[in-house]
Amino acid sequence: MLNAKDQGNPKSREWPPFEPERGVAGGGPRAELRSRFLKTLWVLLSIGLAVSSAVVACAQNLQTEPVPLAYLWTPLFDGKDLKGWDLNKFAGAGEVKVEDGKIIIGSGVALTGIRRTTDLRRSNYEVDVQAMKVQGGDFFCGLTFPVKDAHATLIVGGWGGSLVGVSSIDGQDASENEYTQYMKFEDNKWYDIRLRVTDTKIQTWINGEKMIDANIEGKRISMRPGEIEDAVPFGISTYQTTAAIKEVKIRPVPPHIPRVAFIAGKKSHGPGEHEYRKGLELLDRELQKRVEFIDTKVHYDGWVTDEDTLKDMDSIVFYCDGSDHDIRSYPLLLGPRIKTLGNLMDHGVGLVCLHYSVFVPREKAGKQFQDWIGGYFDYESGDGPNKWYSKIETRDFQVYPATPGHPICQGVTPFSIKEEYYFKIRFPDDKKNITPILTFDSEKKDWENVVGWAIENPNGHRGFGYTGGHYLKNFEEKNVQSLLLNAILWTAHAVPESKN
Image (cartoon, rainbow, N blue to C red):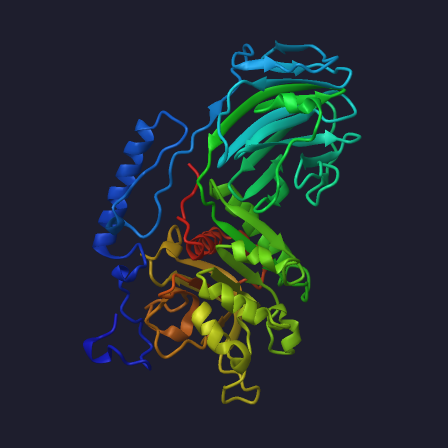
């Protein structure tokens, strides 16, 4: 901590006073008491919850982050009978029966299926179905579901056996709209089909792989005309195909699910180094494993195909080439992208920059990066022949959490790592909004040795910079993973909590 005589001196290399009451949760005795209280409250609520959803109101002065709720699954099939289900009135339907703990939906002339007679939910929910194609060449799971005041059907294995899509969006069925996907489905193999419906999206995953990510704001949702309309409000159907269903369950989801865009640059180094795509895909997988509700997508070649998607993000993660050799190498600096990003930051969208992506030219982006993530690699204003102010070193480092009470440091302990770290980062003189997160200074005093840091601005924007990430294998180190996943969640204003 600063001595009294050093307070307010921007040239001091010691940390500025870290003040938990400034809006950064996790530091000091008062924050510890808050944490214990909230954990106790959470346990009591979890024990008392016997329904699928709950609303927890907490006094505003208790915390700066939302409390995670228990979103419990409700089974819709008990493995014994079709209680709660009716047979659809499809002409020429096949036989439906329960056998060995499974619903067997037999092949018919066309459609065969079952439906529930009451709406369970209209929006902000997930459905999970375990389904198997036993025999046939068309869809083995046609899941009809509510979307607010309308209904739609998720088709799995349709149009010859491989199509995945939603009927209908803006009057176009599953084979026609922009969200049509294809996947090979094998006979007698179980597939886990998960559907999520929120006020703004319809999303599906099959065996954990995201298949459909449909933004439905301003779009018309409807059923495909025909017999399938008898599956409303909630049903499972097949078309000329025999299927088995062994599990059907539903649960509510939070009205807002954190959304993160990972943006990977083009490969520029040898194998195992600067693996932008592989590194972000690894972080994406780990985030999905650890966090109950998160909405992510990895974008490639340094930018997104549709910039409008960034407006919906809570945080953006960049891992790509920087600009020390050629400004055009940094995809963020092309065209009006820096301005686009600035507009997002002004509206509170978070930003994470990893390794080479902290390299920016001072005049074009230096001030912006100090505002957005707290600092940048300065390669233009040093005294040496190459004019580099910041430094690079590759060796074995002993690294320490600089501010252990910060949420990004949750689960992070001192560790050893061989890494190419950048340091002597160009931070602003006024560091009041910046918190050191990771350092190779054992005394935790020297800003020049900081290799991970966070910023929180008055408008709600949060940013994080980490200069490691040269080697792909380091993304598998548990402390690095915890650090980066926590940082992504923190910048998205999400609670860095793991799944139970």
